[in-house]
Image 1: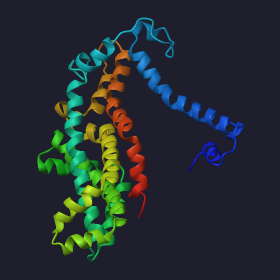
Image 2 (image 1 turned 135 degrees about the horizontal axis):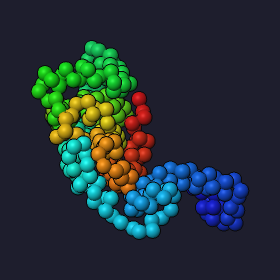
Image 3 (image 1 turned 90 degrees about the horizontal axis):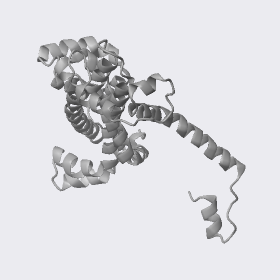
Image 4 (image 1 turned 90 degrees about the vertical axis):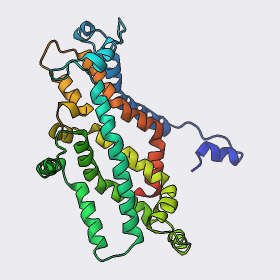
Length: 298
């Protein structure tokens, strides 16, 4: 929709005055933006201070002596549990966990959405309802069954086991996204591809997936953010060698050895949040477009 000023310019009239209502709207938006950005400001500013300045009490003040030592310590030498490893190895663990989990859950969700929308079979609606129900199951309920399953598969305490858990838990969400997107996909294209001899996977790889960019972006952002920030599965199903970053950050903050180095904690928290911030900054607008393109249709 064109703005009132643009419409007035096209009509040759004077621009609409900057009214009180719009001024109040901008003021409210500014207050909300500052409210959401304040924690980020506190984290960044205090991660660049020496510990003595933080102890002086003013968390909102800019550093007097700027330093990046807390960032270096959080990355490579901070005490994580009983080892001074920093967050680096656990940062790598999180990427080893997140990338295959996102790829696998997205592909399985696309396959499920394809089958549930392009093929009719007995119980298809019941199957989709069951998969949709899994979206509402709390993490705590699946802990014991999943622990038994990982034990039987020999994946307990490994990154592969965490990949398995997050893929299984994410399939409900990804299936919902792709099923709703493909429900609005033109059926004529699929029927034409079948008449031209395209098989089951040929339609998926050559017709549906190349036209699924909006919903793929939505699914990848959703899964990446959820799995990167996930804590309960990581704390329950991993050991010291396979901790994801969230568990390592918790161990860093709750370490009982030495002095509480709050500047290192702030730096560690920002390091943990950095990948998700980058993902949203780079692809946030595509996330909104993808939602509008089909993930909320049903």
